[in-house]
Every structure is written in C-alpha cells, then in structure tokens.
Length: 252
Ligand SMILES: *[C@@H]1O[C@H](CO)[C@@H](O)[C@H](O)[C@H]1NC(C)=O
Image 1 (cartoon, helix red, strand yellow):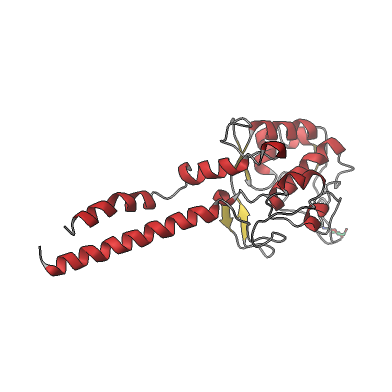
Image 2: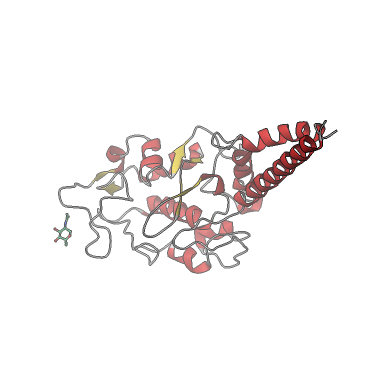
C-alpha cells in the first residue's frame, strides 16, 4: 500500500469523523431550542413566573413571563390578533387557543419541525408538528360552535384598523362548517403548523398541547424520537458512521 494512498485514506477518515461529530452536535441542539420568531427567547431556560396555562413550561421555556401573560389576553400586544372577529369566542374554545399560543411561544421541544421562512415578522416557523389526537379533537369539540370567517388565520385579513377584521365579502360561519373535521381545524388554521395524528397522549409519538407538569414535559421524549427516527431526518450521519470503520481499516 503506497504512502499517498494511506494519506488519502487518513484524510477521508478525518473528514468522516468531523461530519459525524457535527451531525451529532446538530441533533443535540435540535432537542432543546427556540425558533427565531417574533417573541421567542434566543435559548430555552427556567422561567419561574410563567402565567396561567403557560405554567407547565416553567422549568424550561422559550417564552418570558411577559409573553406568557400576553398569550392570555384578547388582542394582546403579541400579534394584535382578535379571537372575537365574528363575535365573542366562547371561553371553553378560547382556552384552546391560549394553550396553542403557550405551546408555540414556550415549547423548547419543537426543533425537529422548525422550518425557515421569509416573513417580515419571523425567520422561522413550525411545520407539521404531529399533534396528539386528543389535543386536536378536544380543541375542535370546544370550538365547533364558535364563529369565524377564515379557514387560514395566517392570511387574508383586513388589517387596516390595526387588528384582524373579516375582509369584505367573507361571511361569519360556525367552526364546524369552516372546519368539518378536527384535522381541518388543526392543520388549516395555522397553514400546516400542526399535523393531525391518530397517536395518543402519553405514547411518546405526538406533541401534547396540554400536559400535567407533575409528570414532566412529555414532549421532550417526542422530539428525541422524531429527531432520531423522523421521516425527514437525513440519512447522511448513518452512512458516515458505516463508512468510517472501513476508512480506518484501509489504513492498516
Ligand atoms: C378594510 O377595512 C377598511 C376599514 O374598515 C374598509 O374601508 C375597507 O373597505 C376594507 N377592505 C377590505 C378589502 O375588506
């Protein structure tokens, strides 16, 4: 075996090692991170004073206490978004929108579903977060008799007054007509931020909007599972790990 060949093999081995280290470091960070959006902290950490329904995230959160308060207010400073655009939203329904806001603003476990966007107000969003069946169905059940004029709440509003108003020509209708099935609500309302699943709470395969913090945050394990086994996970690190021993062997 010539010296040039040994040198080349060594170089490949080092490159492989480097790639494997970088891949595992990236995986570590995806499991505990905050998206680059309007109100998120740059890094997750403890937040002792999280408000109301956001309190389950207090051990490790991407939201500040201030943001958690905003999540509970009608037309808060967070987005000036009015839940009551077709008359007052019933409280039992609003609770789910508050919880949805808490998950979005506070969760450090959404890393596997963070996607780059070119919005004026944020650089990253969540896409296809696998929501637990119960979380989606209870949300739909609580809101089916509430009223709205839009299917996608990210787009199409009239913002000329500073808050979202129904655009001319749209009509206010019951949620159950705008969103015939629970999946329609969870997937369409925030342009596919969530994906409806048939996975159950506690099974470690879906993200819970609601959880009891006494049993720790169940979404930590879910993020880990999808970071390792997700459909969208890159096969490259595995290939590198398989090729590395061969590269090292070739040095002998
Ligand atoms: C938006 O709202 C303003 C103020 O109420 C109104 O004058 C305008 O016609 C509305 N435009 C649309 C497209 O709804």
